[in-house]
Structure formats: structure tokens, C-alpha cells
Length: 272
Image (cartoon, rainbow, N blue to C red):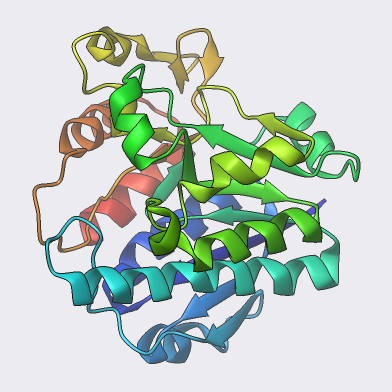
């Protein structure tokens, strides 16, 4: 199976995307469509399995800021994810979207890959799973950084509501997802996918960090293989890297393992 994958990549995120691409392609054959700024476009346009869409005028943006102009620019960048996903869907019938700040440490399970190919499943999405309902009421029940899409109607409805996020007081393009998914047949990926720092940073969830462990030289989250982590490893942030503790935990496990795939990840991380 060729896995069609979309992402958003700018000058600030090329090193993290290189880690994502390398880690995912250790397990899966992929074809990519990237929404890029000019610098990322020039870097990746001649890569054989990447199609670049030069859609981003500026990456001088952020969402964790009080600067309204930077937040508006952030939303413009985020909205281009729909274009990259749509391009792949038009060609392959479905698409997986991944934020560029991810690293895969195990393959996507066969049962999930089979569901990705099932046209009756409109989308696969990821809950934040923080157990912190006030925070999720503000930022969204679902994380917009990883999803699989099969339905053009789902994608278009999500994009349309996201365009009006300010009108409805919603958190960027992420929070609209929880309202759109109610009208479609979607599945929730389990907790061993899209593992972000937000799943560990509350008093009621900190013990989860101890569930990250090595088994048979592979990283597990509890009794399931940890598939991918959602963490900033090298991007220069304008705020504290809230997920640094998770980066340190994962790197420590990679260093303890003799897994050859993990050794190659450590080489890339050292070069960042």
C-alpha cells in the first residue's frame, strides 16, 4: 500500500518534517503533498515522492501569542492543510494528514490501514484525551494535527466552518472538527497514536508517562506499541516548549534500545 500523506511545511519546520518523513518511511511507502512557503517549496520540489504546493506567503505566525496579526497569519497557514489533503484525495481517494512536528517509532497497524481504505469510514480522528474538560472546551475535543480523510463532504464542511471560526468563537481550525464530525461516520484512533504532551501534563494524567516503556526493543504505551509522538524537537518557538519533558522521555527510550530504526532517528535528532 502506498500511503498518501499531506503536511504543512515552512522554513521554520523543515528539520522537523525531515524527521517525520524519515521516521514514517522506515515503515511505509509514502507519497506526499505539502503546502509550503517558498523556502520549503524550493527544498522539496524535486524530491521524487513529494508534490509541493506553494501556498504560504509567510510563516511569521503563531497561535500561542497575544499578537492578533500573528494569530491571523497562523490561521492562513493552517487553512492550507485542506488544500494539500484535497489534492491527495482527488488522486488517491483518501489522505492522511500529519503535522510536521511528529516522529513515528512503530508502524501504523494493519487494522488501521485497512480502515483507512474503507470508503464507508468518512474520517479517522484523534481525541486530545487530556481528561481536562475545561481545556478541551476551549481548544477542542479533537487534535487537528493528525487525521485521515475519505469524505470530500466532511473535508469541505470542516473547511467551511473553519473559515468562520471568529464568527462562532472557535479555536482556529481545530475546534470546528468536533462539531463537523457529529454528522459523519468517523472513528477515533486509540491513545497510542498522535501522542502529544497534553496527554501527560495534568495531575490526573502524569502517571501515564510511566506507561512509556521498551518492550522487545520497541517503544510501547501501556500494552500497545506507541505509533507516533507529536512533539517539537527542533523548531525555534516563541514560547516555552511545553512538550520538552516528553521529548526527553522518548529520546531516553530511543537511546536505551538497540533497534536500528531508532538509531537512525537519533542520528537525525543529533543533526538538528
